Length: 297
Image (cartoon, rainbow, N blue to C red; front, side, top):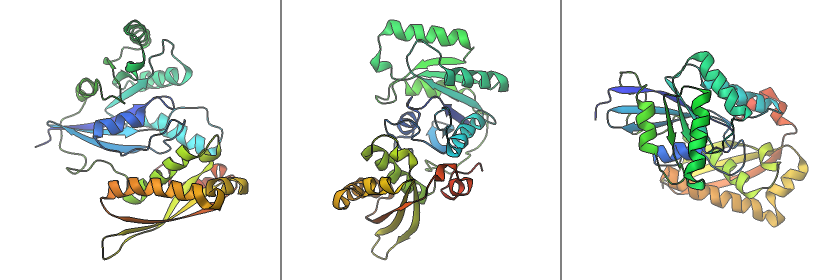
């Protein structure tokens, strides 16, 4: 179908509000990793959704939080910049009748740039109607949102109404990305993120937040098997032992879970090898942060 309208929509909010889950639900497949841990998303990820004659380029962003490392500074910078130079902003909030610091800062940024904004109140399956109405009233007083849409990203409720609301701000024009493309991320980067997702799931406390993943080999054999070598970096020697686990059991589990998702995403058999190395305090090393793919550009 010919595309007549297309534009950039930035999806912003605090950590763990459900931005990546919402993006994946709108796209119809997994393009952003999802866990119950804060700061799962580190980079800005473009996801492409086509609906009728419109192409939506949705930008998944890190949650706005108080940075404690150089990597945190980078992530916060990504969020603040993502409100600029877009056709509209989708602010995702939880159904809590209180405007917290991250939400207040994002609303102030939206006002400062005078960018059209739609409010999506997520996780409506967890609250009663009276509480939801109170949340909508409170945010309606804080800013003149173009629309306030209750949604459940997990249950895929209210998504059509949400696209209707942000679709009003798509300018006329052809596709910004080719047909059938669902994300701007290279396959190598997505595979690295899938490994990091399993680290977040399989590890406790602060250890997974101090990890980064680098794919050092990505090739396809004649029989169609995709071969990947991945290096997992952590900040302490003690963390390395925890990641590997007794007899290598935890690292094998992480690799097996990641490989299953990779095979689904790549539609091919995957041979994955993983190593763990220590890079002390890498989250405060600008060179290493850039080397691991977290770049302002």
